[in-house]
Image 1 (cartoon, helix red, strand yellow):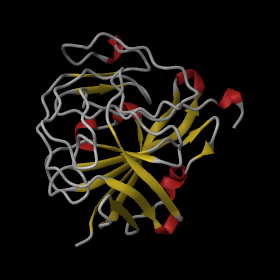
Image 2 (image 1 turned 30 degrees about the vertical axis):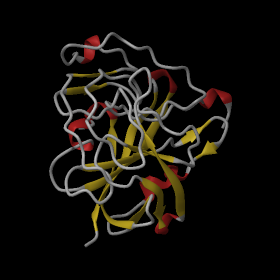
Image 3 (image 1 turned 90 degrees about the vertical axis):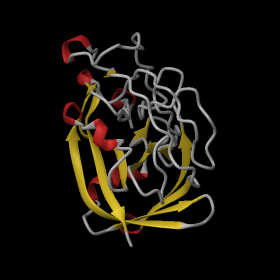
Image 4 (image 1 turned 180 degrees about the vertical axis):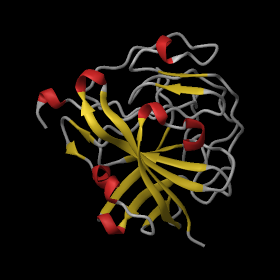
Length: 242
C-alpha cells in the first residue's frame, strides 16, 4: 500500500445512552469501570471504548474535552466521537476469546482482550492479522448482549488484514470463537452490512442486554482521504448455534 493511501481503520464507541459518531475513529467520554471483567482480561480505569482502529501509521486524533451531553454533528470535529456518559453494569466473568475462525473465508486469527487507551479509544492490536475483543462487554458464552470483536482492515506496514474479506461473508456461514480454556463457541451469520459511519447505531452495536450475539467489525466502504478515510463500517452479526 503506497504512503499516500494511508488508511486509518474504523472507530466505534460502546455506549448505553445517546451517541453521535462522525468519523472512522475518535475518542469518547470516559465512563465508570465495571466492577468485574471477563477472565483473561486485565483491569482498566477507562472501560468506555471506542474501537479505534486508527492504524499505527496514522496521526492520533485530536482529543476534545469530555462532553457533558451529546454534541450535535456541527459541534463535533470530523475525526471525533461524542457520547453522553452512562454507567455500565458489570458483565459476568467468563473466559476471554483467544482465536477466531471463519472457515468459509479461510480466516484463522488470534484474538486478544482490549480495553481503552489514554485518549478514550478501544486499543486494538496494531497487526491487522490479530483481532481485539472489547473486554468490558459480553464474552462468548454469555446469555445477553453483544460480544464485539474488531480488527484493522489493513496497515501501512503490514498490508491488508484477514477482515478485508469480511464483506464476502454470507448469511448462514459460521464464525467459530475459541476461548482461553479451549471451548469453541460457534455462531451462525445472520447479516453482513456496510453501514455509513454517520448511520451507525452504537448502542445496538455494543448492546449489554437483549439476545446474545456476536458483532464482528472492520472498516469498509469508499476510502476518501479528504473525508477522514473509510466511510463505512462492515459489520457481521452472528447468533449462537445451539
